[in-house]
Length: 403
Image (tube, rainbow, N blue to C red; front, side, top):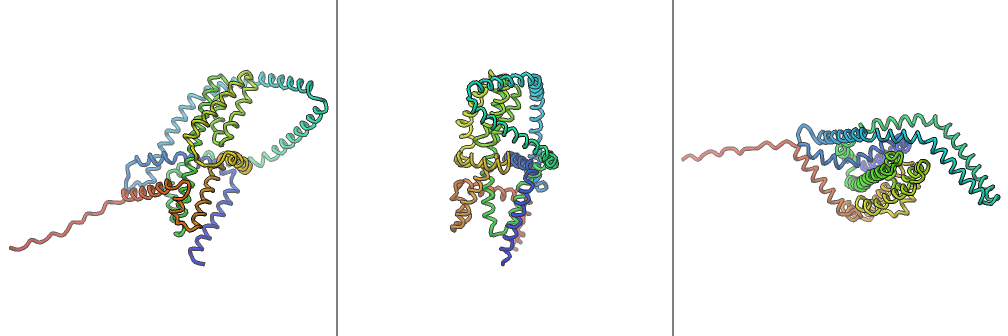
């Protein structure tokens, strides 16, 4: 076996070990997954700000990107402080009102359920009631058993919970180094790739970066717009916990297709228990926001970012949620789109196309190839700007002719 093949085998084995470790530690790595999503969303802004920092032979690209990341962190921190000063008193007041009205809401809900049960018993035949009551008893027993099992397993989850909390604490620092050293890490990684695979790996990374970055940034923008619209609308209606419900709507918006429906459930439940006369108007608000999103926002922001049929997306969400929980719901769709593009690229390479041809013939097509050429040109220009100027050479003086 040649040295080149040994390098490929070594790379395949190392990739397998890394995938196994990631799978084993998937719960602990949840905060870093969200950090990676935010880093992807902020990377274009870091690139633009870093380009504004003057180049220097002593302070290279790492320092310029570090300054850009720090500037973004300061802006985000200032925004969080301002938002907290404006929203925390309102949220605290809404929470206090909700807690004070909770006993009355529970009693009203109990009376409503009792009324429903009385109507049910007066209208439903006795034999049907017996079958329904038997099913309800079985469900209650199953729920009690599940609760007991959850309590028994809760102590086993304390360690993983502490690890997750610690992960969320260190994620901002990890994001700083990830965004600052992005090009440095990428270049070192590419230098370690075997020569025969380097161009293919570069194309595959470009495909993944294009699809994932565009999808994540679009979903975050949609979540911000939808969460703000729902929170503002519920506040104007006088709904309790409107800010928290807007936050829930924005977070669940990260789940494609089903996210708006999932985000509406907590709001409808709370309104049904506290302000039942407002439930129709709240439902209309959620429906209006969803229609605004589907008709105006999604076509403009997302377009055909992943090009997957809605029926297939729902199936993927079921698989991703069962395997990875909430994180699976968020990443399963772009991950599937990436794997599809990588499969098509590999198929074109196996049919004899060169790496450049295989990239250009894909759905992303010439845009990716132009982006790759621009990236190479930018790196070459940056290297030329950071290199010291050549020492000028003066020609030797020509002796004058003797007359």
